[in-house]
Amino acid sequence: MSILSTEEVQKIANLARMAVSDEEATAAASNLSGILEHFTAIRSIDTTNVPPADDVSGLQNVMREDIARDDVFANPKTLLHNADAQDGYVRVSAVFADETVS
Image (cartoon, rainbow, N blue to C red; front, side, top):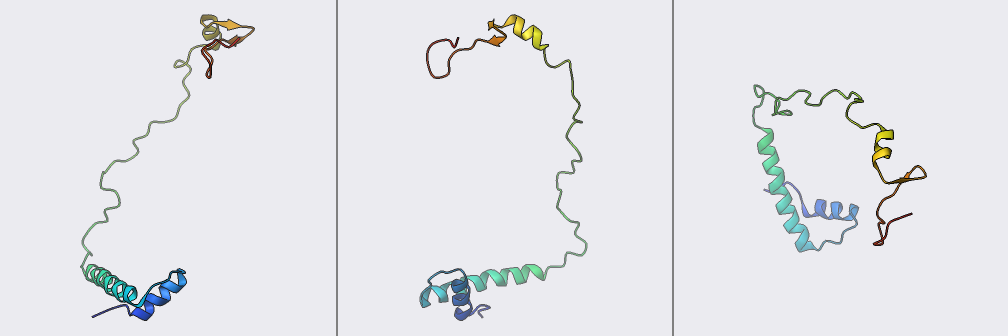
């Protein structure tokens, strides 16, 4: 028993702007009908006493509260004091060359 006809497959192929031969439409109708029959079988299963499984982990909120902390980062003045600074800028190695940026 085929749920989909080859004409319906051709109509769907037309909507998708796909060229489908008659042999391909026949094979697709058979394959899609088999898939739809599986969905029909699944739909007939009684799930009235089955709880939803949208959250199987049971975890609630695992994120910590987002609070700004001043003790984590060093004072910018201390960082500049310890760095190789010139005119208020930190000297770093060049990205594209083997020389130091001045």
